Length: 216
Image 1 (cartoon, rainbow, N blue to C red):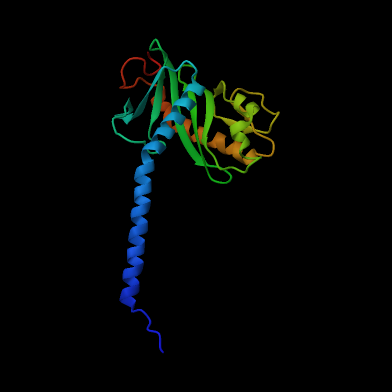
Image 2 (cartoon, rainbow, N blue to C red):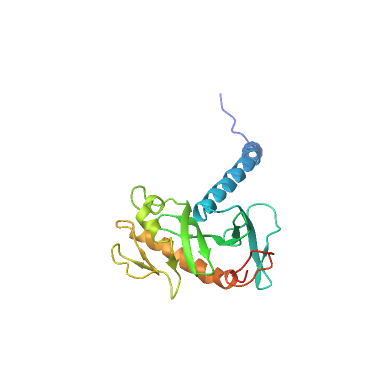
């Protein structure tokens, strides 16, 4: 007895139906988990900013507008590199800015956020938000305390420079991590590009009200 092969139209319908069902399932999972993902991201952002500025009471998202910074009004998570956060103390004193940035690492994109004090023109800390660098080597950019000490009062002038561990002699230099030089240099490169982009806006009065900008 011969076995009939299904027609091409039937195969197309079957495959199309399967793809539709799979797509609906994935869409449902995404919609269902999106609020939790956004809450987790918001919590991680709050924790990172509080780590950079321990006196943080509030922070406000700002975006470029008319050559200055203005309060971000769009809803939802911002695209990377489009927003900075003005950080205030309980009494309304401006503590500085928290600046998200990202760029290529050794294995994948490295996402971070750094604190910037425009009055002193120094970076006051760095928190790694996303990294898939090599476990035990490149991922030390997250856990190496000595590496993070570089960013407590890192001067940005004339530019941020990566040096071999133990060779740091100037306040604009960063001691790299032995065995994770490429990942360390990636962090420095990300900072350098971000500072170059945002510094003109961070060091001028903003359109964001009291407590914003170095003139306050």
